[in-house]
Each structure stands twice: as structure tokens, then as C-alpha cells.
Image (cartoon, rainbow, N blue to C red):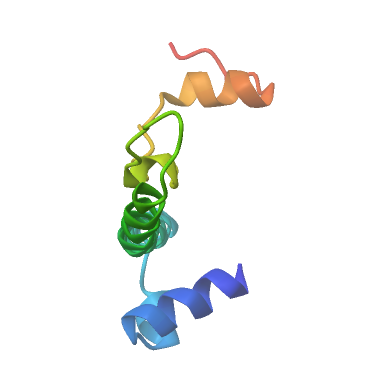
Length: 101
């Protein structure tokens, strides 16, 4: 947990007092958003490198005459995780929720 607090403080230049004023839900949402945005940024950088690799690969003659694209060298773009219902998450973890009435 301390690593996450330090990570948020470093990325957002917030004090520990400012972070301490967040609810756990707010903190988690901020942390997830920071991680998603960094993954997006890394993907864009990796895509640029993959484009260069594709251009180089396309200059080498081959029998298949395949034209390479950046996506041949890189994985899929990061996607946001979809929110899942509490019941589904509990079932996945083997937790029995109390029946609402």
C-alpha cells in the first residue's frame, strides 16, 4: 500500500496530507487512472518503435512478400477495465454475500 501512496504522491506532486484526505475509493480510482494513462503512453512509444521496425522489415526482400505493419510487432492497445457487479466479483473470489431484503 505504501508503494501506491508514494506512486500517487510522486506522479501528482501531492503531499501525504492531501492523499490522506481521499476516501479509499477515490484513491483507488486515481491510482487506476494513473496506471491506465501510463500504459497508454507506453503503448504510443512502443507503437512508434514498432512502426520503425515494420519499415525496416519491409525493406528486406522475402519470398512471402508480406507487408509488415506496426501491429505485427506490438500487442493490443491497453483498454479500461469494465466495471463488474459486486455479485460477480464475489462469486469469482468464492465469497458469499448476505441476501438483501
